[in-house]
Length: 157
Length: 245
Length: 223
Image (cartoon, rainbow over all chains, first blue to last red; front, side, top):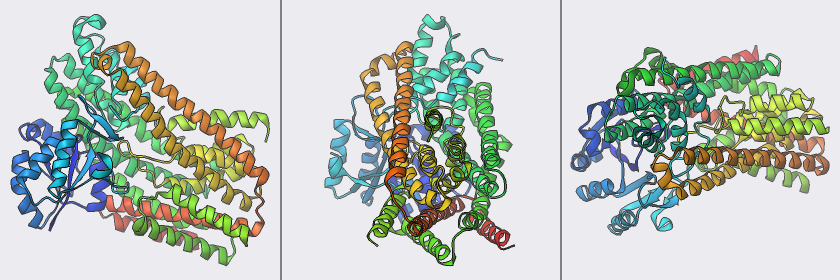
């Protein structure tokens, strides 16, 4: 039926996603698109344990996820795609131009990032990547939980 | 039993003491795991201890009651000489799923269930009995989760996924939601009747009307408002209207 | 109110405030506990119990995942109990719930303030933390706890002052008070119902459980 949410969150599967967004969107499928996790069995096992019974999890690389977007967008499952960072998001969107809307859910500080929101820290490079995604017409908003007010990218940078 | 588990257990009760936006519970994690790292090669002056502490204090975000599972399993991995890069992966892979499990069992299950049962008891027995019932029901699960988590984490180390398949935990996941739903459902009419027992018919219907309007507002009209702000707004309006009238 | 009762409320409010996230989290921060005990301290368990129950209905909305925001209903319940103490029931709850909600809301915003201050503190010592400097890690952690301690003490004091002001100045006729109480209880019940729906959506066959609970509760009341 649809691609319900494309989210950047360095925690990948956690309470805000499974309980918070899960309750509002009722997804059937969570695609965890991460190159590292895709090749590591015990990590996948842990993430799978974090997801409730009715939700299926699929582990893919970012490129595989980009290739699958078309099918998920037109498929019969409600789908959420999770990536762990801005660079992965850029690769996903470049590989799948049909993505028109993304959600920034959590990027925390490491290296030389600056704080924009309590849960959003971006380096200059990442801010630049987001701006260039926005110029391609992708709607980018930051929102940690469904009942929080969304913040538009233009108000952030 | 491993030395330091007791101290780690106690420190886990201030796990969120330095909650911040940069590392969330990272410092709390380091403070809690410290007693378990003292006997790494070279002791407290050694390189292993310092680099393990540095890793522990990085960004970390999980459910406070299940944090012990992460503390135990990461400490065990450090003792087994698991390479730093893999420990980072373990940290990353643990925090989200543990957070999700804890949120589902505790915040969306045991807490609302115990609170609703406490409210029901409030209408039947002495208020202190109600408060004690709530505290007992909630903390029986809370403390059990904490103690089991730390011990299981230490026992299973990097194979911590096995610990999470524990049948009691899985049963808790399946049961806590339904129990909470029944308890909340039962509590609503019982508490409504008890609170409005002195009201006349008009006031009772008024209360019901306000409740219905609240449901509509919170579910559909302004879901981002939250009950506290909605309550302040509506009550302030009522006060002003009452004053003018 | 007596001086000793005020002192007792200050201590209790501090414990309740710290319990919310910083220390122990045994959930004395829930209004059902915080309000009843505060009522006991001021010598009026009955009104503490009623405001505790009403605020507990509000607190059912709190599902603190991750670092999400949540109102500090426990501190609110302490201030509300102080406001309601000794007053006739119907007068007590409406206006006291307003005080409680204001403090709860201030609690939510002040938590963000404290966390932001700790964030800056942590950023300043980033290198020492990453190098595993235990002294710095301990010091920063302790400062985080102290900051929250300062927050909850101040907020408890603000709540008590507010309660004294409200008790001294707000003239509410009995009729007005009934309306106010009805509105407070109504919003609380609506909030709990919305939370019940949320819980039901998460659980397997949650709707059936919620509705059977409602039916059983209604039958209990009628009988």
